[in-house]
Length: 152
View (cartoon, one colour):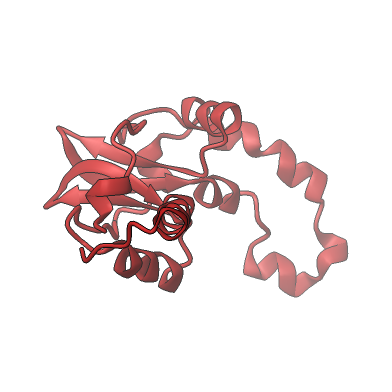
């Protein structure tokens, strides 16, 4: 069974110049953990919740002074400043993707190795879908329950 057989083809994307307030709204409203970043139809990055929240984490030098010196509530208040940034300010530009003709277990291995729950499916640098570990699990479950295991 190949990735193209189970991937989601309807993918919400954002552009590099999209404001993070829009991205954060989508993440909170639709429970997206990350979104592909596309420019001129080409996959150019990924913006994830961890990228947004990372800006709020204490810096190494702050931690060296000790947790007592860190005002975590103040740091949470800086979230408004993060929301004024653009996707291009925080996105991960090096995208790991899988091709649509890859076997689903090979794609799952790539996701697990990189600790991803979802991964873009791309033909070259063109986004064609998204694949989640849940998609893979569901496909394997249904194939085993229905007895439709085929070479792929």
